[in-house]
View 1: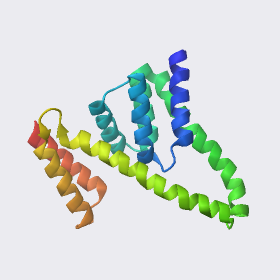
View 2 (view 1 turned 135 degrees about the vertical axis):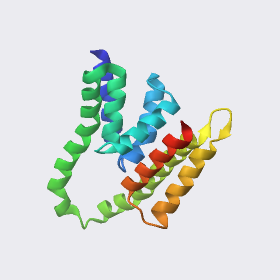
View 3 (view 1 turned 90 degrees about the horizontal axis):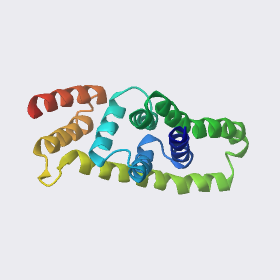
View 4 (view 1 turned 90 degrees about the vertical axis):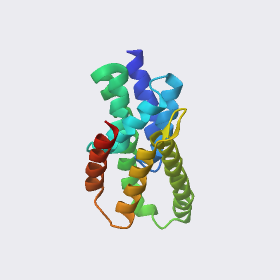
Length: 179
């Protein structure tokens, strides 16, 4: 029972203070699971990959995975409910007042202050995930992973390919080149 409460509270805090969406929450999730010893960096990078290719918000998918790995179905429920509850509650409250205060200088100032924090947290997640995805522990850069990374940027940026198409192509390339 204590484990379920611990998972709920951990993800409740992440949901409450994880401004900027799922990618911005990833560093918070990683720090917390490291603190409790739930999984290592490589497994977390795999969790992020799984969370991206499954339907739904990445933070919810990550919470569900961590909870399930840690404590089965009840752990998955506890972690998922914990990460979702703050946003659900805050959105109900904010939606009632946003129309009234949307022109407030203070509210506009808050959004100006929060935007760069969100970008910084997402950049932090990108750096962490980049290290986990592109590096082989003790051996340096994984050339195949670096090539897939570069092609992904090219396909998405220059050719404007669909993320789903890129994921399928690069998943197949990884399966062929790395097996």
